[in-house]
Image 1: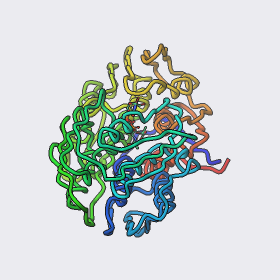
Image 2 (image 1 turned 60 degrees about the vertical axis):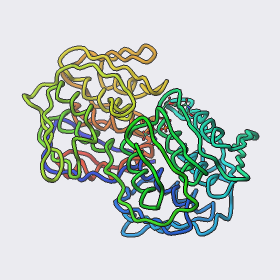
Image 3 (image 1 turned 180 degrees about the horizontal axis):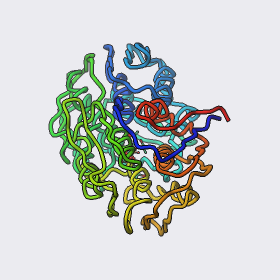
Length: 421
Ligand code: EPZ
């Protein structure tokens, strides 16, 4: 089991390249199931979650070739040989549920293991299932699997989501492209990853309007073709690395970053005293005057403050001047980084979905444990600012969502290394 060692206190300087978005790639890849033609994704991130999705699609009979060191994925599913997504793959990555909509739309049948919960919450998929049922799917839940059928094909429907769900929007959007008639998704998620998926589906021949707004309208078509599509920049990796110079000083340029991907987050950083400016190549980030102001954070669906940046923001606020209040409104258990930050000397009180952080002068390095993807990177950020050495264990969580994190940070002057434990 690898560990990552960080020795803090050094200001950073230089450039960090930002990869393609994990959460866009994980919904673009299953789109191959909608068509017999080849789908090529460029700017793909090199992450273990992408490898897991590759394994899942291959188990269904799709072909996925990883080219140019994993930056290009050549996918094709002439025929779907197996309609069952097995638990032993699905349990490793919840996004596996995103094969349900496309497989059902193309084949009229799909058997997909219900994804378990995960560290940050129960993560039910009831909204995915309700949307597909509204489109005529017959769903039978048994033995931990969803057995879905649509013998005469799916039908267009009006689907009103009771609350915003990224994955349910993605599953319904993909399924609707081949449904007979018109589908309207109301209270749809507006994340850039949804916009990216819609743009790719449109290149494949889908008829979609309204992506990026709360109402998406899809006219079903008989079949979809192939496409070549670049994966959108990862706004969560971008936001994560924006916090590196914020937390330990210096100035870093994030290549590929654009303000429109991180609007609410950049505004909150500005409030905290961090300057973010667009350059021709990306975003330039540095502290305005050496100190960080306490700020309050509420996580919301896009375009609000992203839940996937809450843990990382908490690390910054541990050494801010004053008291910050972070409210986690998306997931029910997403403060597991707090006890680990407290081991490093942070002052954090967690009550239900609210964490109150009282800034301290310095954090102190300590052995800490990664619990989930974003919590683990918040511990790395805290280590960059802490006095002494921080040892982060269980870094396999990190590798799910961050390419070569120690290389990218070392390249801007961080004292960080990965060791075999
Ligand atoms: C996506 O998860 C992302 N994952 C998550 O990123 C991200 O945190 C989340 O969206 C919110 O932005 C991928 O895109 C692969 P939701 P998803 O459906 O689609 C509840 C990361 O770190 N809900 O928008 O699963 C759910 O439990 C990961 O990269 C239902 O109750 O999120 C949650 O509380 C973590 N029923 C809330 O809605 C459903 O049917 C939002 O979930 C679906 C969701």
